[in-house]
Image (cartoon, rainbow, N blue to C red; front, top):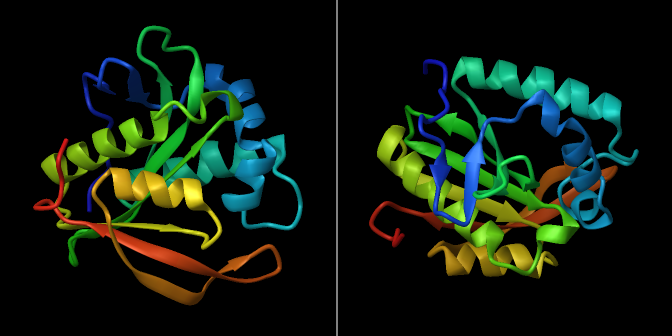
Length: 188
């Protein structure tokens, strides 16, 4: 697949917007993703997330994946104050041949509990089905990540089951709960 390009204008529902990450977001992204809850559920390594990881992961690996058409990541920001970063979300493992991709997200501590993740996942799902050759979005999360499971349900995703020993995580393997969303399930 060709390079994934950021939408112009950026995605927004009037409360939150999804835009490309910028160098100016560096400190907020580092602080937000270093939050203990993000580290617990989203960072698979034993060592803590550091600036070095961010530079390698965000500015190199994610950009290379975007250029290959495999992933595109967005900053979740306040729609009225776009320099205020609330978190991040992405479409990843894009497989046009099978019409399938994954969707993921994280929020900084100050943004949780306000429906921001639900808004971001809905907006990104809408864009994905409209703009990419995707007929199925998959969302996975840890079995004890109840907040992420609620986001999936509020966005219309269907619980499909448990993927046993699904991914390497914190020096072991972790089960994941699998949810899916089809274009016919989607309600903006």
